[in-house]
Image (cartoon, rainbow, N blue to C red; front, side):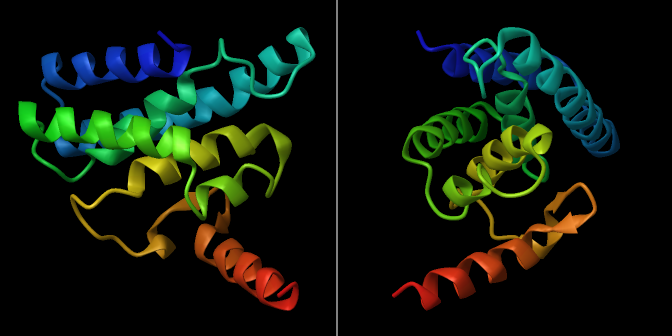
Amino acid sequence: MAPGTVGSLVTLVALWVIPFNQPALLGTLIAVTALGIWAGSRVERVLGTKDPGVIVIDEVAGMVLSVLTLPRTVPVLLTAFVLFRLFDVWKPFPARESQYAGRPDRRRLCADPHRGRARPLRATPMSEVREGQASISHQFVADVSRMSRNV
């Protein structure tokens, strides 16, 4: 099994077993994201590669984000897991583009939460997702503008 799948699966089980309330889940997401930015960049430096498979904290952040405002029932969690893994492999816009935008230490944690958000379970404006201090919606507009100039 791929490391990303294992990380997502472990997160799925934790989301089912641990009785998170909404504020605790949001706090967990913030903590995982901050820890992931810090630890992930250091692991990349030590290993000398970009986004090595041993780093799965981005999958944890993406899975948590994918169910942040949803009831954590078995059908919802299983659907979130399947869709998250599908979008993680497929990398639809803007997740694919976000891997190359911004600071290198934040790219990994920017792309996977996008995949967690790219699901039909609920619709939330992209302006609610933040990468550090920069709004993803600004990056989205910049990407669309750049793409339209290249057409």
